[in-house]
Length: 354
Image (cartoon, rainbow, N blue to C red; front, side, top):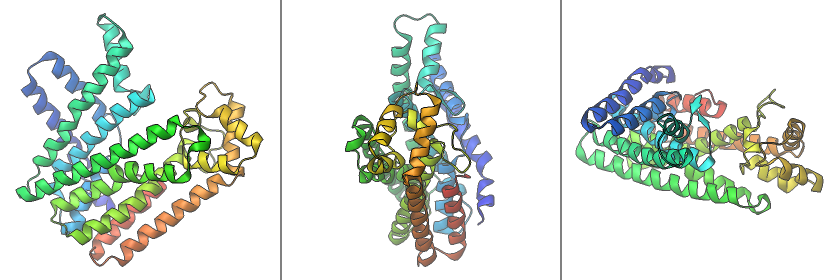
């Protein structure tokens, strides 16, 4: 199966997501709950490339060699998982926007003001946002339970979902703590562990394994997919960090949101370790400072280049990609046709074209 053929399932994923909200609204029979579900539906369907959903379908195909229809419900479920993670992430990060629109807690704060409700609009938005994230999560479980496969496979898929969710939460804990540490106390390994346990788990490895389990994958195949998914997931996040710092080729001087938000990326940690006192003072000035002067932000971007930090991240991406593709090529458990699909997926992940 070619990736383009897999991508043709996108409209059906969208339809499945919308169907789950419609059914929930009908069963809720409550205006407040119905409004909450409409907010969740709009947010989930607002945008995104459905990367994780496609990987669930891809994992099923890797395990079976067949069409991934039986994994469609679980594929929609992983998008529900992504939504509640993003809702809670945006509250933690005090994010105002997501996917080209207001973050859920900010949208709900605006509704509070529009309806002239009592109390703080901000507190209302945060409280309701947390609750809507909680409401979103059971959609993921329900979608896995609805998968048209034998019961033992559904149970195994749920166990994988639990493992993935727990690992992601551990990664988030580490990420939040890293953000609270002075930059000089954050190590390279601290950053990479977050990438392995958070991004790689719920973006690549977990979805691939979840779909493969529904396709009755062998334990050896699941082990191979975990290794491949971890390598590609970390490479994906390192590429995302380069984009977030405005350091993609030809992007110097462009958006550097990750810098002014103070994210402890590998770029920043390595640059700090290699910079002289003047460079470190510059990073201290810009990191976590939305009011930083544009010229100083551009200087910080250039520092990430001049210290060799950008080149180091690119080197890590290359090595992780090489390792993942070598795992795919030499795996005795992945059929040749599925290897081609995984290679295409890996290429798109690393180049950020999916």
